[in-house]
Image (tube, rainbow, N blue to C red; front, side, top):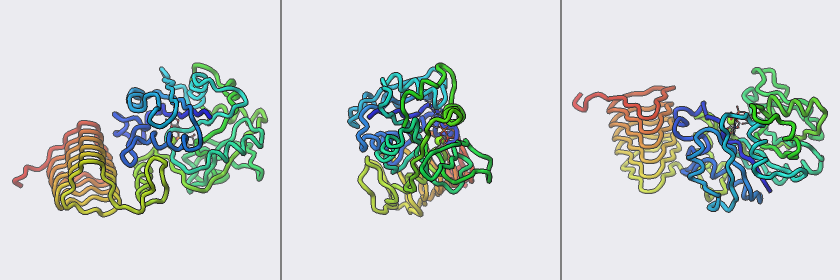
Length: 354
Ligand code: GDD
Ligand code: MG
């Protein structure tokens, strides 16, 4: 089976991390997020995938190559300018050679779920639908595409990001579609066009069969720092498993290779990349720390994300912060909630003697 993954967005809500690392490549338990999504597809027998890329495509191509390591055939559809979700899928499906009547999977490239793909495809075929959308319930649907399916699963309206309090249900578009590739002929070529505000409303307006498959298992969109951390911790606690890593039974700290962690205290789940060092007496919790980060003795890192190669001096404090690659924070500097530091920024600390 063939699939398209949409991975062209700039990941604005994950800045400053995404200034240097595309959202698809942010590490989740020390493997690029996209490797988990590809392994999920492969576990359902998907064998050909087109990655629809726009922003920082080289990093993705250099890492995944032709897909051999995951047992898939990967092709790359790189947009010169953003074509929107439907425009990107149209181009990628064309490059993949998707054929009419052969259902095509399309996925947003920032979701993690255990939704059973085989069951969505079965529903799609049984209904003879043009499009079948994976649906999940969430507490606040206002940040998503919302639908209200009929009891048999048929969808008659699609509302993208309704104003808070106005959504007709809490069932949202999970960013997983099964399409009859012929619907992509309705997408205008070479210009920005979205599924959410364009193709879905157009199909519904024309009376096409659009179906929903509802799933109440695990689902998350990793597009914000909070949810990106949450996915790492849910994998660490065993709340959900990735086909890429053996199920983990409730571990507090997951460290990559060659880390030196002398007497640090973990006060909540922590994921550390490869070759990190954490000094004695440091306190770290609810944080995701990328490769080659050094955290000085007596430092404190809480609810934060630290990009690759950062240095934190002794006694530095980071709370609810997101800092890009290669940032240096001096000894004793306290950075409070909401701090964002761009790649390479240097925040000098108190002199050691004070
Ligand atoms: N190739 C390409 N080109 N990819 C794109 C483009 C583009 O022009 N624009 C967005 N994408 C990719 C993003 O990289 C992401 O993986 C996916 O399409 C969705 O874009 P987001 O920017 O993350 O959208 P969202 O999270 O606000 O909303 C979407 O996802 C929700 C579920 O997480 C919508 O599809 C909602 O309806 C849905 O509920
Ligand atoms: Mg998203």
